[in-house]
Image: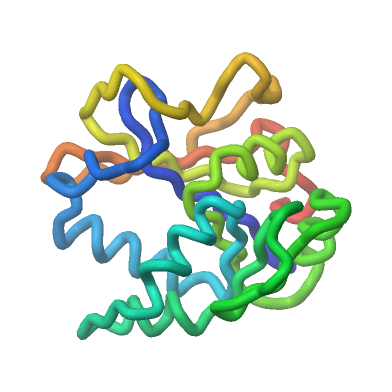
Length: 185
C-alpha cells in the first residue's frame, strides 16, 4: 500500500505561488532532502498548473545526481478537467479524483509524491488521502499571492511528525492527519 506525501514550498504568511523566493534557501542540505523524497516515490501526483509548469521545464534539465532523470522518468498522475493530451509520462485523472487517488494508494509501490498543487492538496486533505504533509517553510513574507489554506480549506487537525532545519534558515515541517488514515496505521 502506498502513501501520499504532499511537499510544498511555503512562506511564513502561507504563500505557495511562484516560489522564486526559495532560491536563496535551497542549499546542499535542501537538495539532499529533496532527492531523498523523490527517490522514495515511484510516481508523482500533480495538479494541472504544477504539471504544466514542470512539463515545460524538466524534460530539458540534467544534473549529475540523477534527480532530473528520476523526475523525468517517473509516471505522473495529473488532476485535470481541461487537458486532453497527456505528455511527459502523464496519466490524466479526470473523473472522481478522490476515488482515483484512493485506488492508486491501494496499489503496491513506493510513495505518491505531490509537489506544489495547493488546490489538489486541499482536495486530498478534505478526503483524508494525505499521509504526510511536508511544508518547506521559508523565512519570507510575500504579502500577496496564492495561499495554501483559505477560507474554503477543509478543517483538519494535524499532528507534527518532525522538523528538519537547514542551515539556510528554511525548515521542513512534517505533519500527518491527527487521526491517521487506515493505510498509514
